[in-house]
Length: 415
Image (cartoon, rainbow, N blue to C red; front, side, top):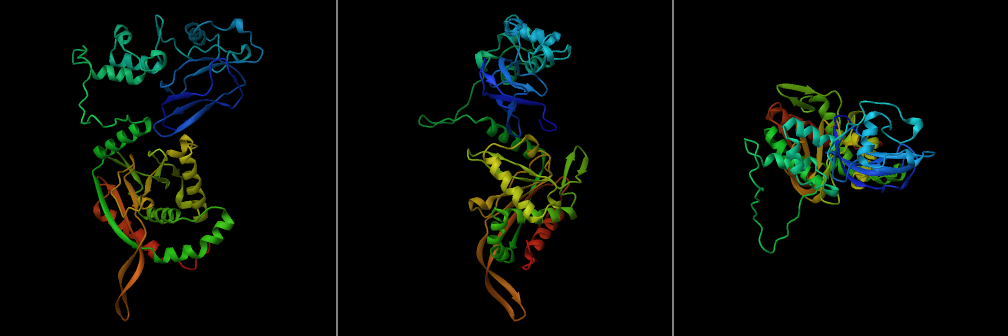
């Protein structure tokens, strides 16, 4: 898992108990607050037991399944789940497989998490202990997981329905604004996370948004000149997105406080310039893969990475570390023909740049012969920033730096 990830939701088992599995074959799908990914089998064998159900939240480092490897005598294996967990805890079975050759005592492996015949995951037990939930209370919670298993959300819902004395105050009542013909759709897991993160960002950072229009005529003409040759050579299309990434990376080098984050009253100035690329998914959700060290990459390199990350994001093929470590984010409103917008900061970053639609507009130009009206390619850039450390002057100067980089584009540039 990526750095900083402490738990994941087991969203789907791809194999059933008793199935043959091959080494490196996917056996389960998991989801973190960043990305969905697959868990592969470390060995070839038979999937003997699954220790968590779909929907369970599992701490990083926990065993999720037992695989019987070749040559194992099935009679030596535990006959039920409780015995299996006990044998893992005592060290008579290994964490990953049930092979005799790989079994080593390890008292710190998996703790027994049973009360009577009911199973509780380590995370549920930890929450119960920290919140002072008794075993009697835990046994009264109706589980929403597979086979009625109690999940993290079930425990949190139980806590929300206790008064100060710790007694239940009844089933929560939902206030609805829907009509008799309205359709009610529950948010999926990713949409819930997006909603929570957006609310958290607005509550955390005092948002200020600045706008600037940029004459992209030189960039548009240059791209028209080189895009066909570039596609033949590189095999990918040269879009405007990597051009904006390059301009932003160059500007960030001169404005370190825009490439920063806040920790209490401390400002963290990031050495690396890692730019996140907000990407709309086919299901309507959003994910932000990150281009690491964007300032050190060439324009062809940025183009390849932008296309690769966007493709894999839309096909659910990103790895956890590819959506982590961002220091600045760019979102493209223009891909949906919007002129501009006011984006929400991707915490813990302090700024996010939004690109509007590129449109031909009549513009007044100053010439030696006087003012003239000309048709130019104009884009509106907007940037939301955390007013705790980025003031209006700095935000404006940063946007102006990007504007000057793009408006003074080298028409003879080779790529």
